[in-house]
Image (tube, rainbow over the protein chains, first blue to last red):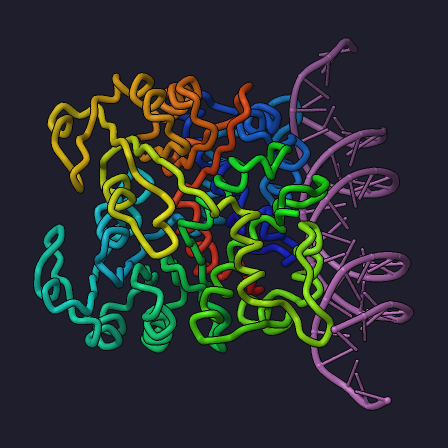
Length: 219
Length: 219
DNA sequence: TAGATTGTTAATCGATTAACAATC
DNA sequence: TAGATTGTTAATCGATTAACAATC
């Protein structure tokens, strides 16, 4: 059975958010030459209990061996499969301000699977200029081009006012996953789309909240 | 009583993460000319139940009026106070790659309170060049300069290998809050520091996970 | 074998929500 | 007043963890 292909849907969002953290730590362990890992060793640097990890993995039918733990390569492959990292994805970035520009350049070893294929902006001064060999298209062309190129993931980095409209266009063009970096939250859609809202200032507000002594506990 | 200054520490991380979302929605309502808002109206676009909102606010002693709801200006001011947005903050950005560069330029109406004061990199080609009128310093100068300028928030956008070391230097220089955009997670410190790990690829992995049909439910 | 580590069950812990009296 | 909306209590729901038999 391919890991992750069959499982009941009692898997929580919390579990889902831990998987990438496991994966990153596993990459590190592999780079150190480890061949296997126990749930305790994996969890320690992440501040996650061993039982939690075993439970998370069991949801997906990913098991280790008593006395030995988990085979590192197998575990990495399993989590990559669960997260859908066995294949490549195409992305369109909308809004080539500072964040959009930063994201366009953004690359890393794990991100080779994500290819930025289309760029859009509505600023006439940017349209038809290039970033990394990619032409910035007029946002008016969005629906047509996104559909044509069968883009998987839309990344929104526009000003707040434009967010919802852009999201709607993306969905109409067949995009099923949106990563939203604007300050405007995108709500529910009738269509089956997954939206990840990633407002960078939210993180800053957590920091300032902490700095004001309002949070005596560590998270 | 200043909102947020006195409260027991049963406030959950979940509550804390909703506050910025409330705030953003409240700004929008204010821009529309609203003067008051009920918990139901506030929660609807966010997909949050009215009882949840009233409970969250009650932790901080922020109350509304029956039949009327919450006075918009008062509610905004209260949440701003809770989140520590009544004052300004200074930031240092370490790592002027694409993300670091994007963050340096990153501004918005709500972010006027955050002033980028210092930039650091270890690349000799970048050192002593300028971004937005700010000199990029050698990362070797970090401890000295950060201490001298009494920086509040450190933003890490370096390659993974450098992350922990940079974090330690920041803490030694007296920084109490770190926003970490690298792929390497920063764990616990002995000192009282709050660390927000904001690995951008984690969000991408959620999208790919969804795209693989592994997540039948909407979140 | 001995004992380290597993997967799972049951208990605990914590967060959300329904219910409702109070009140503007 | 009438009834919309509050703040809070109690019930529910869900996620984490402790306990432990199985096993490599």
